Image (cartoon, rainbow, N blue to C red; front, side, top):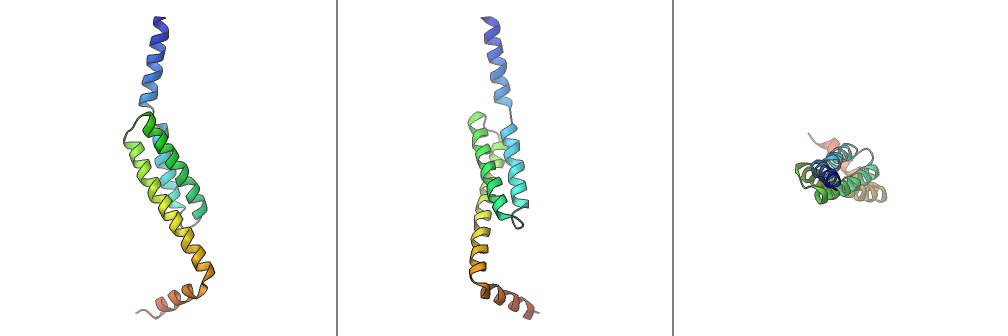
Length: 108
């Protein structure tokens, strides 16, 4: 009986000190920001996964990794959505892009 309690206590300590979801969340968030302008769909998927991992880490053991992962994933998620929306709008209205290119060519 005593050994069982000690094993549960060790398991609880390991779970409390485990930062794996927080570190994974921060890493996925950074990678999603790096992929943002090259592959916004992938960035959206990675930032959503990062958000899920950071929330899971906050439930297990709230720490700096979970907070950093949460912030990075929210920024990545918002930027990915804005990038996808702007890509859709530019593909439907190519004259907007032509105006921007012509204005930048005329700039001093």
